[in-house]
Length: 288
Image (tube, rainbow, N blue to C red; front, side, top):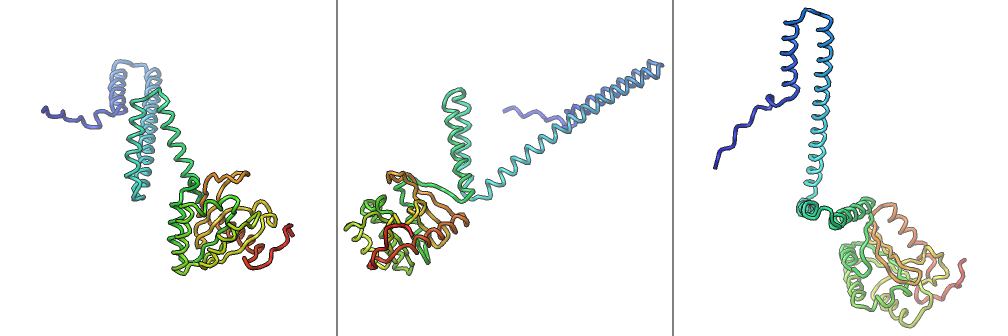
């Protein structure tokens, strides 16, 4: 294998040094052969201006290089501060580079950019303490209930989720609450209903018998903004279910933002104050 050639000294490649040396030699020759001082000085002024321009260009180029290296260094330092991020970033960047190189000019490049933009939007929401999961994904709920140490507050809108309670995922969710109750966690739930059916009554009494502090309120007694499915776990994470006017669930929104948590707690307490216990007589249907 041939040995790599010796690299030239960095000073030998400095364009300002080379240009300055050449101009100095040129000026020496000019003043040696010319006796006209005025023309010589004019030439010197012009050449000095050229040297200054070259020097400024070099300084600007060096500043851009330093700024770039600083920016890259800050990015690398930020990535390395998050233990799990380097293992994700490297394959992501490798995949993006491959798409850009191998599929340039095709829709794949646009799709790659959209994927990163979607990721940025998700991270922007997380920066505000918000994140979403598809409706029916029970993993976050299971983890939150498993981590709860003191109190869980939740509302239920049976017109939306009564059937869900009886599905396998709903029963799994209920079992996690039974485990929490066994650990001494307090669970407060308000059912916001339109009609108190036999199926709803059976569900509410099952939870009441298990130790949940169950209350109920007719939907017409609440303003529309309070007829929502929501939850709070130890006041550290909150949840709201987004659903259509027809009662079709869309996605679950979670928040860890303190102002949102305060709003959700205030909202739950307003609903709870308007509700009655299962054995108490119903309040009038109209909003007072």
